[in-house]
Length: 137
Image 1 (cartoon, helix red, strand yellow):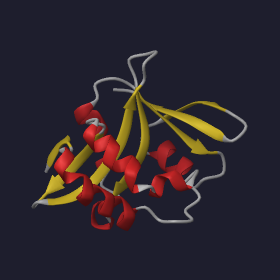
Image 2 (cartoon, rainbow, N blue to C red):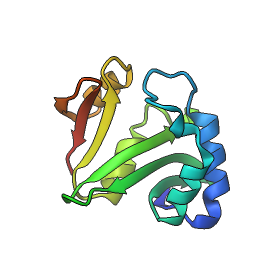
Image 3 (tube, rainbow, N blue to C red):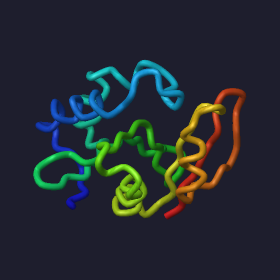
Image 4 (cartoon, helix red, strand yellow):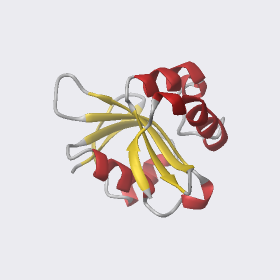
C-alpha cells in the first residue's frame, strides 16, 4: 500500500471517495462542511490531503492542516473504505506521514470518541462541545 500526498489532479476522485465513505448523519460529523466538495478540492491543491492507495484505488483519505503556532498537525476530515476498516489504516497513515503530534476534536457524545480511545489517542482536554485528542508520533 502506498501512502502519499494526494495530487491536485486526484481531487475529483477524493471528493467521490469522501462522498461514498463519510456517512451523513453520523454523530461524529460536526457540520455539513465535511460534505462540501470545494473544501476537499482546495485541500488537494494545497497538498493537505493524504491518501492510502492500493491496486490503484483509494483505501483511505484524510484532510489535515499544519498548525501555525506549534509543530503539530490538525486532522480535519478522514474516511477509510469499508473493506479496510478495523485495520488501523488511519493511524498507519498518520504515523507514516507525520513524525509530530496530530490533534483532532470530536463532539462530546460522538461514538468516534471510543475509536480514538481504543486506537492509542490521548484525551487532552475538552470544550463545551468537543473532546480534544492527540496522537503522538
